[in-house]
Image (cartoon, rainbow, N blue to C red; front, side, top):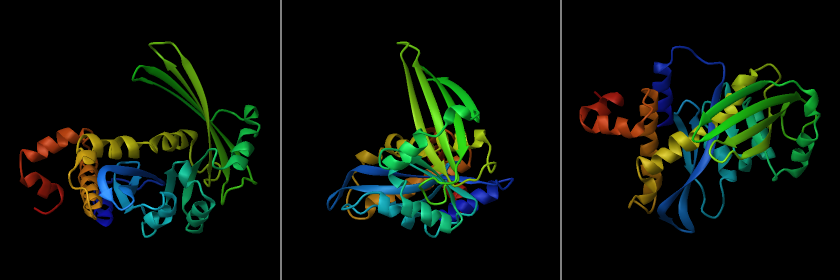
Length: 275
């Protein structure tokens, strides 16, 4: 599936981007039944919406050991990997850098020493690299990004520290919350603009909004009665295929795209290049 979708994306691309952001995140198929609990799937998705890989996580383990096997074998040339804090592991960072792959890794309490180091950097002396402001869902959100080149960050291949200040104001209650998020990246200074880095940090959550949420709502994945053996993984893969093809064809509403396809049986065959 990955090779087909990447080839299909290349056919539709008019220019090759310098960098390709790829998000890694997991999802539980809640209605499934497997020894030890429900099936958990880890996926890699380009920030443009194409699913590149998916792997079932051992029910006796968690997502972390599945990170390298998920990405191993993919074409990661010019890739920048984004993932949540569970995958900010030295082994993962080392594996990526040994293959020339860049990352943006979020740092939280699972790395207390590194987090303390990032918090105590002289951020007030650094200029603002990017600022953006969005309004929607009843709130106003302002985000500031600052970067700091630093030689001795305790993470494999880290070249820069990043701090995002996120201020949210509820337009109904008037309440305001402020949050600081910290990251490390292997990208050297000047490799990407502040706007691009900020977009990658926010864009990571597309895998939740444009893939996992769609599988739950449009395809009712968690309510599926196909629950046992390898079938939940297989059906999730088919849903990933459909979503990715629709995204590549510039559909933003997957439910509407499904209805359109259902009205004309040859349409899915045409989309897949079969007819």
